[in-house]
Image 1 (tube, protein in one colour):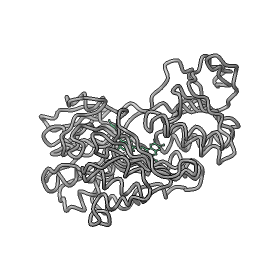
Image 2: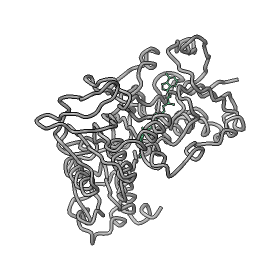
Image 3: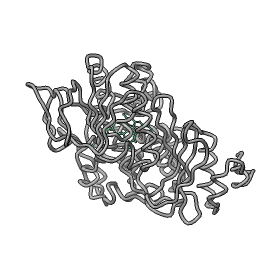
Image 4: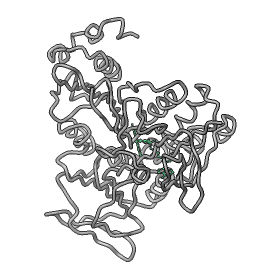
Length: 410
Ligand SMILES: Cc1cc2nc3c(=O)[nH]c(=O)nc-3n(C[C@H](O)[C@H](O)[C@H](O)COP(=O)(O)OP(=O)(O)OC[C@H]3O[C@@H](n4cnc5c(N)ncnc54)[C@H](O)[C@@H]3O)c2cc1C
């Protein structure tokens, strides 16, 4: 019997396993996951679960019984260290081997550490359910949280901690929060949003000195500043994609990911998805790598389709969201720094959309509290139809008409 082995029990791996069954794959399906818990909804870890608004088992993607019911063998707390693609065999940390006919890698990433960080019991990172439980418990006893890094995880945890009534000091080396993902102007909107909600936002700032007492950080001195107290620290400075295993297997590594074709195939019978996949995207005509939840799940489903029915290009446009306070951000596509940004809507009221254009084509669309426009923007990206900036900026122009009414309502 054909055996599909999926390494990684996150967004990609879980979606791939269940989609294989939905598509009528009759072979064995095995998930090998280093995680201690069965697959869960990772985005809750900086939001509802962290704040205690949603509890176990609601964070899990499936009931425990669904795995045997769907004949998915779930091997938790097991890590694959290497193997041979030629022999179609994986080796496990601590001994043991597992053979495969087809291999899926959805390995995610590991939070980056800071080189000069003292090892202290109140300095945490956030990736897993266990990390979130630890942070949640620590927040109960903390009064001032120091956040190092104002990317999505840092910004969402800041919002959650404020909701829990904690003081928050946010330290970001770049000029505004979320600059890498969203650019300077939208980042500035987030800086103001967090300040209005009581976060002490320090941008263009770095830690010069860590103050410690026994095994705990008690505060920091920022460059050119005075001492700041803190009794809990979260380091949220991005992830390193987990590439040790792909390297050990001899897969091509490029642009921080495993190089894959448009069908998410990295080698014969080997597919890769989620945070670690750098894959050709037919709509954009270039290779992209995206670290977002819906993309990981979409990759899992796309890989399952290729395994069950033959390789097909994965053409879905990347999508992600972020909730901070009562502000919902949605983003479709992938912009680069030199795209032209066209604004539509009410910036002050935080109900707006930004279109990112390159050569007259919409490459990405970012919306704050503006779901409908974001959906239409996604269709504009897919259409690959040139649009002019003044029409996009003019709220009187019907976007659906720009796409073609048939597609817009479809
Ligand atoms: C706190 C938090 C909040 C987030 N919020 C959002 C959000 O609001 N919106 C959004 O779009 N995205 C969000 N993300 C990002 C999103 O969760 C990730 O992009 C997504 O989980 C990536 O899926 P993946 O399958 O690539 O990896 P993961 O979901 O990280 O899964 C990787 C799996 O691989 C396992 N693994 C790794 N190496 C091995 C090995 N050698 N052997 C065995 N198992 C291994 C890991 O244990 C894990 O089970 C958030 C991420 C975090 C951490």
